[in-house]
Image 1 (cartoon, rainbow, N blue to C red):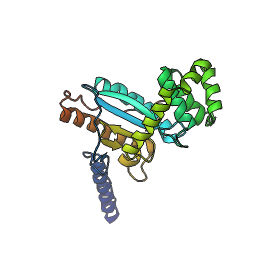
Image 2 (image 1 turned 60 degrees about the horizontal axis):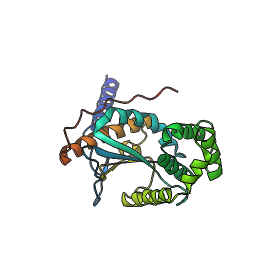
Image 3 (image 1 turned 45 degrees about the vertical axis):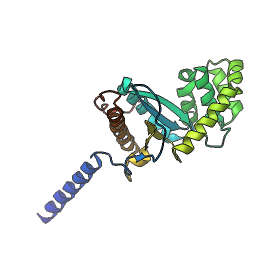
Length: 234
């Protein structure tokens, strides 16, 4: 009987702890509010920026869930990504991402680069390897190199690096909402929690922050929080 009471007490404690994690997200715990930023002008929508890297396995794992979340938020948000320059100002993967973005060709190659790096184990960490891979996947090589070496792409690379410094980001993936809230699976998750649960916790925090930003900015009534996102079947 005593053992049964101890087991029931343990279950109760676990349930109460889980409930605490599911409570309203807390500033300084599940997300961070930046001290001083310039809020983006995105009309009636809230800007959401994911800072990621093609080489990051956590970014690859989050990608299908993030895509579903963006669809569910719909007209509430303007979503974009910034590739963090892991190896410095001329990081090959960041440079390739900005080039494809400038060309309007991301939809053609983005998922394929992730797959090549994390499934096919093709590191794609050199400019030449990336250029060849991108050309083999339907992007005109001459046009790609023209954009790659353009002043506009170089300027956008510098702007991305500046944003990372402004938001004081040190890891990927990190998500910035309305230019003033930062969260990530590393922050919204809990110690020893499976990665999927940390990712789902992050999406719930993002739901709350988008709704809050909409309300505080007067940009419109916030939509209901997005439904839980299921993992994509591989």
